[in-house]
Amino acid sequence: MLFEKLWVFLKRDFLTASSYKFGFFLDAVGIIGAMLTFFFIGELFKNSHIPLLEQYGGDYFSFVIIEVAFSSYLGSALSNFGGVIGVEQGMGTMEALIMTPTRISTILIGGSIWNLIFTSFRVVFYLLAGVFLFNMKVKFINLTAVAAILVLSLVPFISLGIISASLILAFKRGDPIAFLFDGASKFLAGTFFPVAVLPLWIKKISAFVPLTYSLRALRETLLSQGTLRDVWYDLSILLLFSIILFPISLKCFKLALKVAKKEGSFCHY
Amino acid sequence: MYAIETINLTKIFRPARNIFSLRSPQLKTVTAIYQLNLKVRKGEVFAILGPNGAGKTTLIKIMCSLITPTSGTALINGYDVVKNEDKIKSLVGLVIGEERSFYWRLTGRENLEFFGVLHNLSLHEVRRRSEAIMGLLEIEDPDKRFYEYSTGNKQKLALARCLLSNSDVIFMDEPTKSLDPGVASKFRKFIKETLVEKENKTAIFSTHSIQEAEELGDRIAIMDKGSIKACGSINDLKADGGSLFDIYSRFTSTREG
Image (cartoon, rainbow over all chains, first blue to last red; front, top):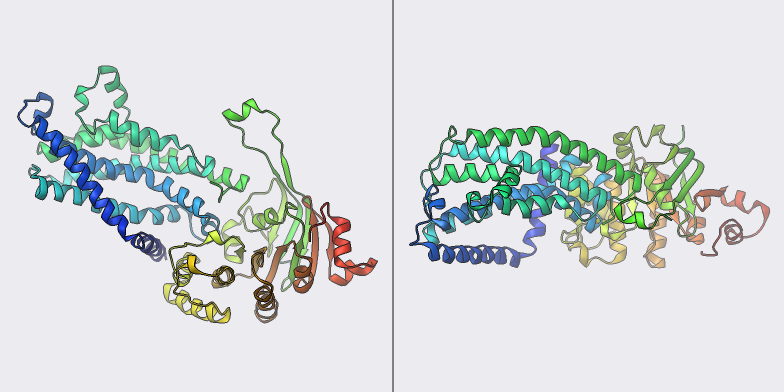
């Protein structure tokens, strides 16, 4: 029954998304537009010797596209659950969903599947467009290492996403988690530049951001042919984040459900 | 055993305190339901009649486990709505008068399929049942997108969704609120003759229409300011003389009807 339920969520979101066909086209145009911007910034530095980029192959465009593609993936994991709650509350369907004998975890996961699949397509589109349209340099990829990084990165991001959903469920708006970890962490984790260029005190703050470790490990594997052994430190930190954040996130969500039921505010937004 | 029983049920809404409310400490609590005692028999059509703000919707949401009561007990077929939430979801169906409870970009049929599967029916079963229910309710154009539906059709779809789950107890929150008199009358006839008399369901509906309560309810509870002011069959209520409107006006703080 669980798979049938997840399937109808996926079908619902696909049907809804495909009813706005122009949106797909605009999204692809948006990606190409962003890539063009990064490509020309890269051209600006093409013949300059930038030591901080040397360890990543010296090519700014390849550096930034990998960061942007994967941080959008993790950002999606972060914002998905909160998005599901926000959309259902906004549309007024939350009570109708809660009235069904379906676990709230199934509603959250089911409502996120389409976004995760769509974001995966976007990442692949970024990489393919980078390689075939912009001559992006991607060396031999250690798939095991990349998979391990993605899995261990997704858990803390999903946990933060559940905390974010809890805040939206309880307070409806003003979700600081999405702001802090989607916006600020892109800066702190060095999405558009290596963290090494940041002042020491900011570097210290970036040590508390999971994205720092995810991106550093991804750069190492995708641009410097790193193996699992080369990224074990970053993976251990991501595991630690997962162990701490996941139980906290579940506790937060239970508390938020209690608040929403007490206030009768499942459909408030 | 009663289909529905409440014992001293109370719900007090306390405004959420946050950093901004510190500047305005005069926050008022709202007593939506106060010490409410109610018994509804199985197979009964029970009307909750009251003006806006009487507490009707809060009562229905508590019975559907959507709101936690502050104190007291609420039971459906003997199951506590707080302690047995999962059981309650399989026992009750809710027809929400709010048309925003559907996905507007999906067709009526797709909406029913989605909610049917979430009610633990297989896709095959949902398709079979929804076809039958849509025919029964005379839902026109099930393959049109929901936003293209007329208000009457939207309301019928809300009832169809509730019937899919085959619940024993059906709650309806102002089910004919936005329907024209002809469609509303058909809707009431369906509830009384098909749902209750043929399928032996228990139906509880809230309304602020005296005519609707009189036409549909086996028994009527007049509710105001969170408590039941009078309860009984139409004959019981009229025993002291006067029309239902007179009785309603006597017990409620507003003269809406």
